[in-house]
Length: 215
Ligand code: HEM
Ligand code: HEM
Image (cartoon, rainbow, N blue to C red; front, side, top):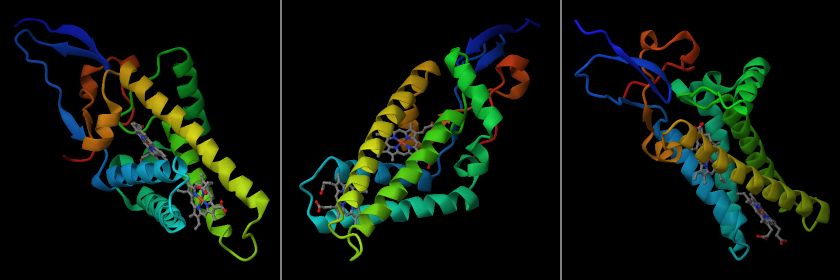
């Protein structure tokens, strides 16, 4: 019997036997709720933040909608399955520092779910969207109606979020290039390239988060 050749994919060294056809198995990583949540959140925020001519009822309506989305996502982070769960992707300090160090050295591992740096940005974006919604609501109350400090805070939170979103998108494109897979498309289809079975990987190239939702 022929001995296997070893080749390296974006996610590690894999042994192949002559005659093997390359197989790129896809697995469902982002469930339907996560995909709906992500694109309706992104569309609503960008529509309101980049369009100052929106009627106030639509501005407020979309603002409350984003608050509801964030609340639902927080709940889903505890009751959902697989990579939607916070327990799957929120890193501890050590894992975060290790990942950032690897990132700086250009040797960060591919993650099937959110990587630790993405997770940090995700928590930040969720908190910012919640704060924008709350300050916006406060501007409609008797206590803060017309309050300049609150208006400035509302606007500053919006601008900071837009900056963070630019970094978020840049990072998604960067990681897509690094690991040769379209992460933005994956947020639409929910599917990503499966990790090779762990026994085919060398110890140093093992992907984290080997689990995935059943397709
Ligand atoms: C206001 C705009 C946006 C906000 C607030 C936002 C927020 C988020 C959040 C909260 C997640 C985590 C999804 C989850 O697990 O539920 C996420 C993931 C993601 N977002 Fe966005 N996003 C925005 C815009 C965009 C845009 C415009 C793109 C690309 C064109 C994008 C690409 C992605 C990708 C690829 C992921 C998955 C990252 C990964 O693989 O770890 N986002 N985003
Ligand atoms: C998606 C979340 C939100 C974003 C991105 C956002 C964005 C903005 C921006 C860019 C402005 C300044 C320019 C303008 O009037 O359009 C603003 C002002 C304001 N927002 Fe929001 N907002 C959001 C949510 C909310 C919510 C939930 C409310 C209230 C229920 C609200 C109430 C207001 C009020 C009262 C003003 C001041 C309008 C004025 O007197 O000029 N916003 N917001």
